[in-house]
Image 1 (cartoon, rainbow, N blue to C red):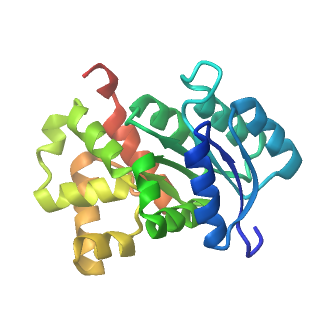
Image 2 (spheres, rainbow, N blue to C red):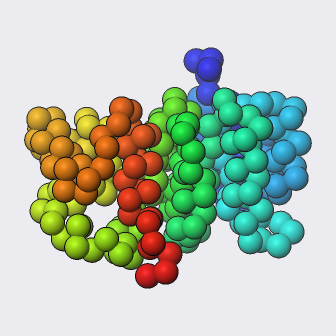
Image 3 (cartoon, helix red, strand yellow):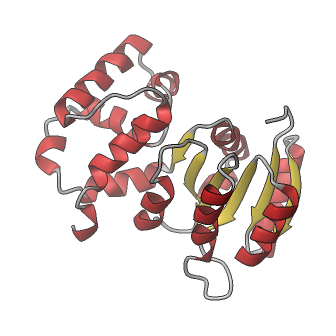
Length: 223
């Protein structure tokens, strides 16, 4: 990936699409195309092959799951392209579908995050660099619906906070900054979480995200 991050945007709301274009260009990110539908997104991919795609979950013609289906297709056909899906509401199934796999460079965020420009741009760069990012509200809802309540109840309040931060895709340094604790404390809490939930630690932030979300999502859809 070049030093300048290149992006294709797919969002059917003209106001939001234009707003994202402006804020990304102001941040020094090259917007190669901005389209309003899934078919146009795939055409733009064939023409530009950007570093990152930002796509709405729901797009024309049915406004159901065209965006996330296009994102999944991009993950398959363009494995070197990172994908960030934006959603108006928490839709856990779409998040699980998108995050299923072995590679990084994927994110699922609520559209409210766009308002915090600095945070949003930082998220884009992390995802484009191969990281994973899941909106905290999605994580909290999955936690709340998980059938593994007995195991989760074994966690201390601080360990639960660390688990949420891990599932959001934060690194150890990011967790330390968010929770205002030391790096050593983060490592200890993570070790306790993995032990209590019987999870393999794995290497890299994305594998940790997948492990945690796989654990939390097991059977949660029927809760």
